[in-house]
Figure (cartoon, rainbow over the protein chains, first blue to last red):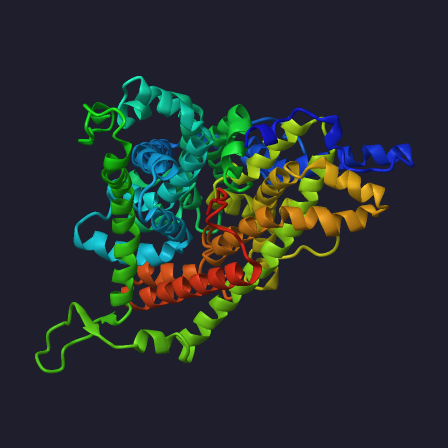
Length: 293
Length: 320
C-alpha cells in the first residue's frame, strides 16, 4: 500500500501524452497550482483575517496591514473560556484515541490473523455500524445520559465518540496487520512464543507505524467531532474547542465576532495541520488502506 | 499480554504450537471488547430509539387530578404520521428534500472534481508532496470550523461578494443561495479527499494496459472512458458510497454556516437535533432519527446491489 503511494516518480508510469505542443507539458503543473490554491485559499483567508485589526476585518487585501494579534488576544480572553475548551478537546480526543487503540488493536489482530467462525459476521457488523447516522445514536443516548446524570460530563462525549472512532480504527489496523508477513509469527512461535507473546514481542513493535497512523487519524476524527459535544454538554467549562468557537458572541447581539472566530479557528486547526504536514505520507497510506486492492 | 492490556489472556503457555485449539477462544477474547463497546454505543441506542419513537412527553395538566403531568405516554405511530402531515410534515419533507438534494449535487460535484484532481496529480511528478499536504488541509479542518470559515467568506460584505461581479448576494440568509453556499463549502472540504483515494486507485493500474491502448490507437478520451474509469471504479464506488452516507447525515456544515431553522438548508439531522436538544422532545426526534437510519440503510443497500460497491473488500477513511 505504502509502496503504491510513494512519491518516487517512475518514468514508466507516465500516461500517454502526446507532446505536440511544448506548452501542453506545463498543463499538469497549472493543474497542480490550481489544486493547491483551491485547497489552501479558504484556509489562508482564515489565517489572514485572524491577523487583521478588528477595524479592518472587512479588508480584502491578500496580506493584512498592519499585522495585529488583537483577535488572538480576544479569543483567549478569560470570558470566552477558549483555553479551557482546548484542554477539553485534548482530553476528549486523547482519551477516545487511547481507548479505541487498546480495544481496536486486539480486534484487528484477531480479524487479520486468526481463523475463527463468524469472522465475516464480525467484519460485517463493524462496517455496518460505521454507516449508522450519528443522530440515530445520539437521541437515545441523550435520553439515557439525562437519566443517569451524565449530561455535562467528559464520559458523555468520549463514549459516543467511540461509535465512529472504533470501526475506523479497527479497519485501518486490520489493513496494516494484514500487510505483515505471517512467517514472522510462525518463526516466533517455533522459537517457543505463545501466540500472545508472538503478538506482543514481534508483531506489535513492527506494526508500530500502522498503529501510529491509526492514532493520528482517530485523533483528528475525534478532535473534529461536533454534534455529540454540542448536544451532551451545556456547561461552558466542559465544551470542546469547536463548540466554543461556534458559540462565540460579540459585544452586541448583532456583532458577529469574525476576527475572534477566525483566530480561534486557526488555533483549533493548527495542531491538525502540523500533524498533516509531518505525517502526510502516513496519513495518506492510512486513509487509502483497504481502499485499493 | 496481560501486563500490556490488563486482560487476562494467557492461552496455554505450555503449548507453543497450540494454534488450532486456542484460536477460537483467543479470537473471542480479542473481539469481544469491540463488540461490547459497539453494543453499548450503537446497538442499544438503535433499539432504544425505536422504543422512544412510539412515545411522547406528556404536556399540560391532567384533566382528572389537576396535577401537572410528567413522564411519557405511548402514542403509537403518531410520531411517524406527524412526519408526513401538517406543519411538522411540511418541515420534515422539506428537510428530507434538502438532505437528498445536498447529497446528489455535492457528491456529484465532488466526484467530478476529485477525479480531475487525481488525473492531474497522477500526471505531475514534481510538487507531489506539496499537493498531498495541501489536499489534506481541507480534510483536516474540523467541519464545524469550516462552516464558520465559509460563513465569514460568504458574509454580505465578505470576500466572496468582493470577488463576484454584480450586486452582493446575501449568501447566509435563507434561500437557494444558502443551499448553494453549503454545497460549495462541502465540495471544498471533500473533493480533495476523493481525489486522494482515486489517485491511489490510479497508481495501481499497470502501465502495460495504457501502452496496449496506445498501440491500438485509442484516443486519450477513449482511454480514459474505457480503461482508466473502469479500473478505478472499485475504489471510486467505495469512496462515493461513504461520501453519500456521510452527506445524508450532514449536520455540522449547514448548522454553523447557515444556522438551524432555515428552510433551505435544514437537514433531517438538524431537525432531529433541534427536537431532541432544544425542545427535549425525544419521541419525534427518535422518529426522525429512525427514518434517517432506514433511509441510509436502503440507499446503502441499493447502491451496493446496483453498482456493486465491494465494501467488505475495501474500506476508506471517512470523516463527518
